[in-house]
Image (cartoon, rainbow, N blue to C red):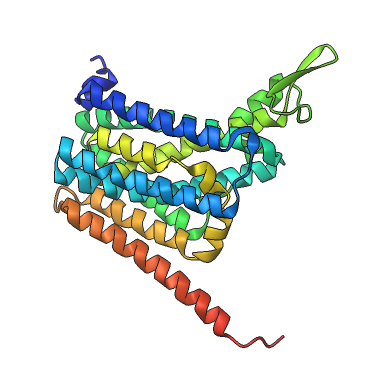
Length: 318
């Protein structure tokens, strides 16, 4: 049996899909132009842009409700919040990759840009494949739930952010066929003598691609636990990935400020995985799912703030 083309699977108005692609593309272009030539945003700029992208992502709920239904609007917000939070973990991995390959600050912007583009593409493929598999084989739902539960446990134990690019098969393949040179501006390869060599920028990009593939496999099951509408999932993923260049400069501070962020995300993923595994027995409504997700995130943030205040209140015995 032939696999249906993506638009047939999504079963939505091509004009709506085209509009989403154009809006996300325009936003990515704005992001690229604002931080052109590797310019690093100031802390104030990063905060304002991050808030702006967050508001934009949430405002998309309105057309989703108008064009589809209130339930789909609630599902969109739920998936958006989950994916937006998971994108922080994605950025942490990018940060580790940049540190591993000592990527110059001026070149990080272009890698982030391509990392976001590739993440959108990878997640689009994962959504299309996921919808096809779920429609044909119901057992896939339980497999996705089990995978998500494993991811939740790894994240809770702090093992999800481990990065060792030298063990990546993609990086090994490049090292096998090409010699590695030094950085040469924003070039991915250059000529040294009479040989073409790749720069460490190529290895960093390949490592980001590998990370994008892993995150697509990890994050899409979480979205399917909320809704099986691929258009809602892809739109939520697309808007959740906007503004990561601005958010990147804040990620280290956010991780420090919200010390229980990883554990909170792990609990959210665990609950979402459970929702997938028991959906044939009990299917939570869209508002209930959104309420649980918001409640867990609020609890994690509150506990982090209280822990910081408790530490600040401790007398300095040194």
